[in-house]
Length: 378
Ligand code: PLP
Image 1 (cartoon, rainbow, N blue to C red):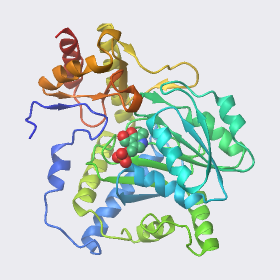
Image 2 (cartoon, protein in one colour):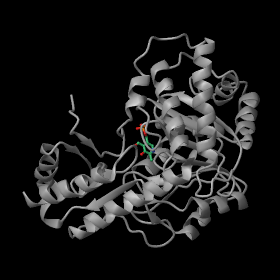
Image 3 (cartoon, rainbow, N blue to C red):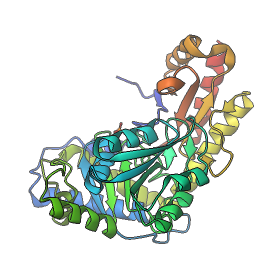
Image 4 (cartoon, protein in one colour):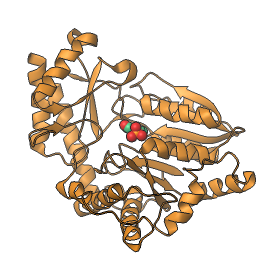
């Protein structure tokens, strides 16, 4: 059991406020009761605002419906893909990290996929993306904030292409929605996915999918045309949309997680989206500056249309402690009661990652940097 001194800096799950934690500790209610519907509605209204007003000026950027799902973001990604495309469809998937690859792998199960792939941590060449999209492309997928590498991908530029070629556009906003700018209409987003356990600062196990009118129509048409054949059962988007009108889920809802999410989104509104975005930007910059002062370098290559993430920081480990030698470094961090993440897949032993999602104080950011410095000196 972590003590009060424990500092959780992994890019999910993130630290929760006390109110979010205690929200989970109540007697159950029926997921078909008015009491539950009120919780769902509160979470849903809050999410609608977060998905559509994640800007510095607070203006509305689009319209749609937020669905709350019993499951993590991968379920949301799969819901988007499996309801919008089928075996006769072509998908273009942008891959420059683990989660872009996950989107592509999900799409492989349902449609024909063309990958636009660059090395993890590198920027996409927008011309290469354009070369991959054709009049036959039904859906383009991209991860906005690539958690595995700390890069913010050029969703706006890709969205322009999806509009030009009239394709659907599904965006993974898992580590950006609730912590950074996100624009639905300007970026031509049709479906956006986020996760409770990231910038929303809710617990793991619950996620949200924002569905625009255009995506909802596309999903309805596919379902009607096939009479349901090939449409997933648990993640049937039209069914979820219909139940969401009643503030319910099609199947039993994870009541404690919904309660926690409702409190977490309230807390986001209390802070105010623009203040929250500014805070995340300040703290990410503080991490970057602090690590730079230790002589460390950012892992991703933020040249071109890609920028460094404002919700997490990925740092290249010094050559001398890469690979198996990195274990001693991670152990030294953990001994100091701080939890950070290493690289994922082939980046294991090459990088470390810290998040500033959730409820971090400036002192905790400073402690994160100090701890890394001490662990490197051990
Ligand atoms: N997309 C991104 C960008 C993520 O960071 C994650 C989790 O870290 C996911 C998708 C998948 O989330 P989960 O493994 O919780 O389903």
